Length: 223
Image (cartoon, rainbow, N blue to C red; front, side):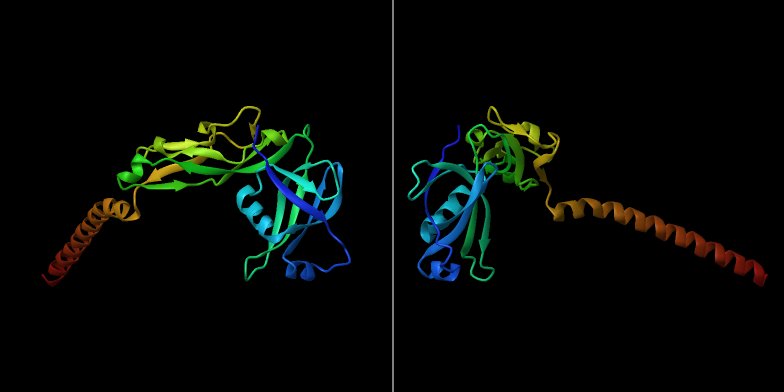
């Protein structure tokens, strides 16, 4: 079962403009869901900033709305930011019920040190998140990727190699490569250079033969 993050909210007065809310250090938002009517909410801006940083879009949140006794489980569905300052302008929360199967993208977090990286190889992460399906309280906040398994250029970690929690179904191809190691570009170029030189030498030999053939023809013509 996933750990939840508690978050306090207030009902928003629709007559107050969003700019006025933000000047009062409040962030406007909304909470909606499959079985819930949309609710206009407002949040303390400092608390909302921490929530977005800690929860992302895959961590289950328990929302308590002032004046409403029951709490509501939800996920962050969307965050609108100022394109210049990056400040949060609006937050969408998606309300879920305990028995509602849902899909979500869960971030992949690398752990450990790769022996291949210590040998000078470049370790590349090709997939940052995977789509999964499960009940809300089974939703993992993140899934670990063990880099200690990447020991050389032939090593790779696929989606099928990940440690997926029980009751969670992955909705991606298990053969998809998550992490692998490769040689630095400079080393690849150095290995390719000798082949290029052989090709050039072969071309020069052919040119020499062609030139020799032309001189013979000219000598015969003079005779």
